[in-house]
Image 1 (spheres, rainbow, N blue to C red):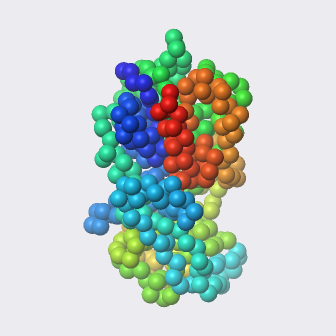
Image 2: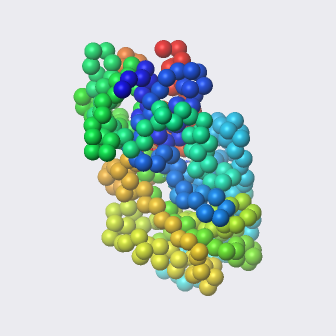
Length: 359
Ligand SMILES: Cc1cc2nc3c(=O)[nH]c(=O)nc-3n(C[C@H](O)[C@H](O)[C@H](O)COP(=O)(O)OP(=O)(O)OC[C@H]3O[C@@H](n4cnc5c(N)ncnc54)[C@H](O)[C@@H]3O)c2cc1C
C-alpha cells in the first residue's frame, strides 16, 4: 500500500495531522499500534451520561491557546476544574488530616464530555478507510528514495510505502519500535532515547459516586498526601452534574506498583479516600485504574526507572537530517512550546503541516 504521507501513531498529534492533511486535500494513511485510537488520551465511558472519565490527560491550562482554539474549532466546550472549598493535607506518619482554607486559585479547564470527546470528534471528520488501527509498526527503512514501513496486523506483516513519514509518537517509542539504528545518525538515535515521555510512568485512579458528598462538606476534592497510595487528588465530576467522581495520581513508583494486583491498589485508594472524606467514600459506584507504566506503546523501562522530568528535544540540532530524509516529528515531546502537553501536540502538528504543505 502506498501514500505520499504516512503517519505513525494515532494519538492527538497523529489524528490532528491526518485531519489537517485532509483539509488540504493531501493524501495520508495513519498506522496505529493499538485497537483503539487516542494514545495517552484514554477514558472510560459512563453508560448513562456518556461522559468519559479521563484516565490520561484532564487539564488544559489558561495560557495554552492552541489547544483551546482547537477545541473551539471542533465545537467542543470546556469548563473550569472544580476547586470551591477547602483542600486536605495528609501528613506522613500522622493520622491527623489538615484542612487548608480554600483550594487555591488553580484555574484549569476540562473538556465537556471528557478528553476522549476530542479524539472522537477528530476521528468523525476523517476518511476512516485511511486510519489503520491494530497496525503496530515494527520496522522502517529507506529504499530507492522512499520509505518502506512494516506493520504487524493480525499476525501478518504488511508493507507500506511513502515519500513523507510523519512520526506522531514519542521519541522513546521511536527508539523502541522504529529501528532507528537502520536510518538515523548516532546523534539522532541518542536524542530519541534521551528525551522522556511526559507522564509515561504514571498511574491514575478514579472512583465515581452517586453524590458529591465532599462538596456538601465544603471540600473541593483537592487533597495532597505524604502517605499514599495517592499523592494528589482532585474532583473529577462531569461539570456540575452526575457522574460525580474523585481522581488521584498514584504516588508509589512504577517498579514497586508491579508487586500489587489491580484490586489491591484500588482497595488501598478507596481506604485512603475513606480516611480523607469519611464513610461515604466507601460506596463508590465504579473504580477505574490505568497504569501507564505497563503500556508498551507509551512507556519504556527507562521511563519507569527515572524520576519524571519535562521533555526537551532540540529539533534544530537535527533539522538537516530530518529534512534530507523527509521525516516529520509531530508528537507533543517534539514541540518547542509546552512539550509533553496537549498544547505541545497541537504546536508540533502546526509546524509539521506547514512543512508538508510546502514539500
Ligand atoms: C496520566 C496522564 C496525564 C496527563 N495529563 C495531562 C494534562 O492534564 N494536560 C496535558 O496537556 N497533558 C497531559 N498528559 C500528556 C498528554 O496526554 C500528551 O501530551 C498527549 O496525549 C500526546 O499526544 P501524542 O499524540 O503526541 O502522543 P501519544 O498520545 O503518546 O500518541 C502516540 C501514539 O503512537 C502509538 N504508537 C506507539 N508505538 C507505535 C508503533 N510501533 N506503531 C504504531 N503506533 C504506535 C501509540 O499507541 C499512541 O496511540 C497526560 C498524560 C498522561 C499519561
